[in-house]
Length: 264
Image 1 (tube, rainbow, N blue to C red):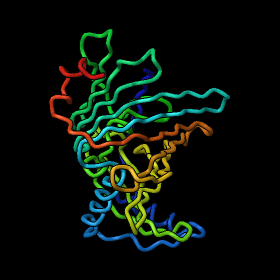
Image 2 (image 1 turned 180 degrees about the horizontal axis):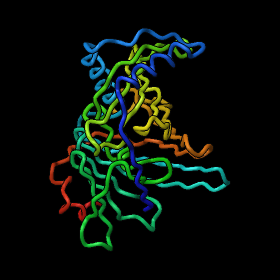
Image 3 (image 1 turned 90 degrees about the vertical axis):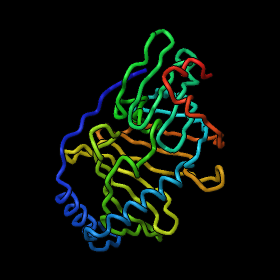
Image 4 (image 1 turned 30 degrees about the vertical axis):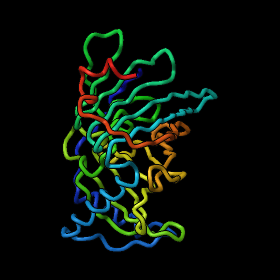
């Protein structure tokens, strides 16, 4: 498994809010409202929580994920995973393809992450920001809990086409989260995530994500296709496709290092 650490630096939240407001006012074809005041934090958190509920169930579930990565050249890489998740805080990610890496398992408890490999006696500690494959970080697959990982600010409302969107800035609660700063677009009428921009704390755009192909899975419409594009190297992207989601009663013992060898 290729692993590459992405490091982030500090950010001035007040300056980021002001810059975002100025850019919104200047953007052609899009309507923006004034930046909210401090009392809007509770609303911002509610929006992020509802968007989390759209992406994945709060109860235990299983889902299969296929990740197709393309670069500037003709080569294409396809990798497949099975994810078991409970409460958006504990998860197990099993590699199902390629066959040569089958048996490798990621275990996440809270924001602690380990990888188990059959030929290594002890699990190895990883960070959520390390690259899993292509443009996908470990945390993109193992942890999808924006509400717990970020302090949100509601920057503005924005119209894209005929739809109104909340635009939020998410600042990581600590250095252990997958990204330290995120700009996040959520549709106002139903809290559907639309897109996200992931920044370094020096305000450099690292990559973008689009949430697409909404289909009914386990009782509600959810995005089944995520397109993650590298903002630093044009033409490189990873497409995550979700299928086969089903609710499962997952006992706590599954999410322990001692239990990893029993999973198949």
